[in-house]
Length: 350
Image: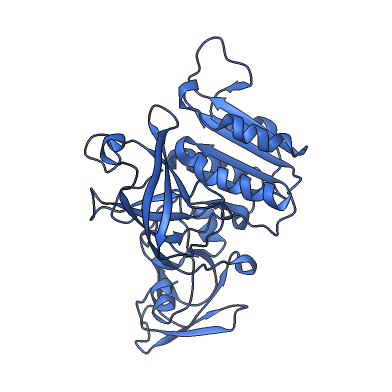
């Protein structure tokens, strides 16, 4: 609640449980004040659209700036959850990170890379593999993303999730080819092996929580399979037995990719289940396929998600629908991890 006559003296922001206290001027956002003080805090779009900087307002006088209800629902806000990037400080404030015990902060890097290979995964999705030439080492957590700048569009960086697991050499991105005029349009003709590519990051909070020993649901759509692949590879590496429920949604058969690899990984883990869901399939439906929206399949299989962690990646509409379903089935906000790619001033990669 905003004070009617706010005190124009400087205020403090305290992160509960971290022993961190910083100064803030009246009207500063929580995120800006923390970053200016050199305090690491998860964020992405800085425009109230992605939800990466969600935290709990424990106490204090604040003013909410405009934000997307995907990033912060009315129910979230009613329970005291705020977006640090859209919360102005008008008094002393105490906030709590939602995932404080597993907050990761990898060194920020700017990498000079070259194209190792570029090949098609589907009719409109490319797999780009890069070799890191300078600026490393590059560490990240499975599920995070980076900003990628191509030489043919030096002033138009795009955000893409890493499709490789952190332990794998090089970098892999799955890039959907968009309409004419976009950076990704005609990518196969504009990018060649050996071309220079700049990568900066990592970013995003939708990373794998390796300490979680309970069940997991992972939902991917389109090139959103990239971060989910990274997460599944990392889970396999640490020996996660499950249960792990993986749902991959697409319109038609030709929009799917990566099936053989993911099924092979799942075959080593008895508690893993993988589902391939087509919303507009050919008739008759092929073997191992389910018909409908990916959220319909999840709803049919998982009535109670109270003990789960969820990882979502793909088109924003799919992520929003899946998040709404999972919350309705009992998933706690702090267990919902999704970077839906809503940059402040540029188109996103997934």
